[in-house]
Length: 84
View (cartoon, rainbow, N blue to C red):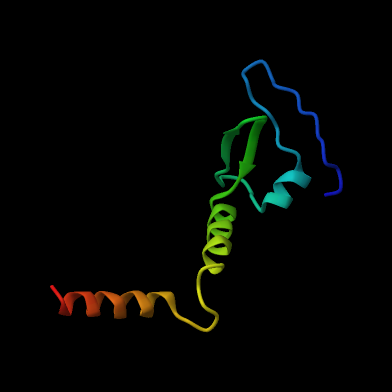
């Protein structure tokens, strides 16, 4: 999808049709949910999968390469339990 701006028309009952190219770029189909988030300058459309991917990318900055965050957490909890 090369267009950065798309104008949409709101129908009489308040509906907006999301163009096929935008749905494809979002990876959504009939019945899927999208998230409309208000921001300072307008709104952002995302999916839950996109939010999860973004959260994982942010977390990866703090995880040592080759480590397993779940195993590390369990090990830390076992150590803490010994001192309780």
